Length: 496
Image 1 (spheres, rainbow, N blue to C red):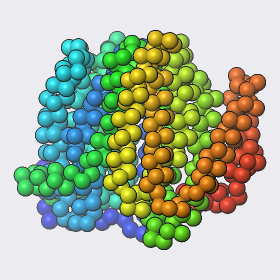
Image 2 (spheres, helix red, strand yellow):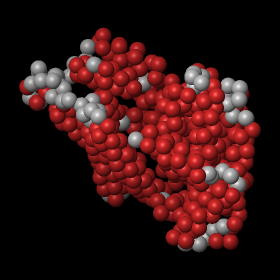
Image 3 (tube, rainbow, N blue to C red):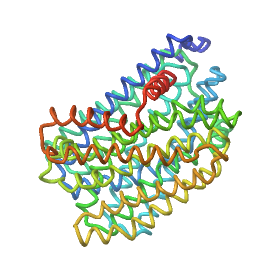
Image 4 (cartoon, rainbow, N blue to C red):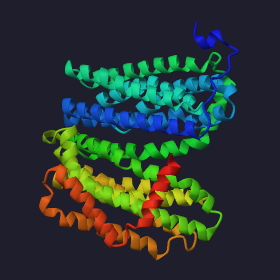
């Protein structure tokens, strides 16, 4: 009998409170994210090196299918459960039990639906079979994330981080031996299922520390969780829709190895755009308060814009200069050389993405969430249509259709920029927006141009030279100011 079951009347462990607890929670989450990111790089690099570009591309395709399917299976319930448990901890067992039951039932539904969609899209038997296996194997990992939502609601981010890191450790620990013994994609999927089962078991053991009553899954609570997650589901679907469509377009219009090259580059892209999300969310609380005063709101947006553009421009320069290094370290350039070109073409789009993240966050804070969601959906449509047109062109001319996908992404970010400007309150941006964007392009372009003779130099020399030169040019053109450094420090402090 579990400890929770043997103490049915024991209260939930008291969540820590106060500023020190917030700092500890932030520290655990950041530490966990760093560890998970590092292990993810090891996992992805091992897959690429052992499987080769074609099978790695197939894994990327079925993984995109699985991620999109689970956006439906989980139905936004994570945000709902965290909110409701935080408000009423006494409902922890009921809501967690309902969440786990809902996830299991949703997985069964999306397994059938995804198999049907894959068949309608004309994928071969092997692809359909692997996608179905991965969706089934991913259920334990999804259930463990349900437990992690409860840990967050109880402000035990240390439990959440521990389970997340353990899950990734198990993933690497099961996958590497499977590959070393000659296993291919089915063995990898089996290893993922075992890792998920281990993470779920660990989550159940950690849950006992909260001393909750036994879990229960009543139909009325399951219905509540599904209904409560509905307002949140659009965000999850939007996040997963673009990668899914990109993978489908690429798999239909390019060679299997091209999908693998793009999948390898995509893993780096996901890490590169993370700072933009952090910066946007760090500025969101103050933007929300300032939105009540139009003049103050405009000043706040402009004050935060330059630091974001500095980060985006510097990230674009670094992506272009060091794409070859990171691809070689993780995947090996012998098999994944075209991934370097994909990342370098992605670099200008990274600057646009950073800017758009802040603008969208600002407009959502101003009460324009619905029109921005419509604009985002329009951008997804534009990106997919452009990718469908450009992938065959670059596949035929350069043998690398992934270039067409990242160009579609960049042009879709232009759509988001135009939509943001049109929806912004009068006087929010002014000419300063375009001046600062021009300054960031000058600083980034000037850095690359001046460093052109030493692009192939040792990273130990190139990285500090790039940083110092970019900082000098950004200050010279008026992009980087002393006040911007203070704003950036304040954004990070508010984030913590």
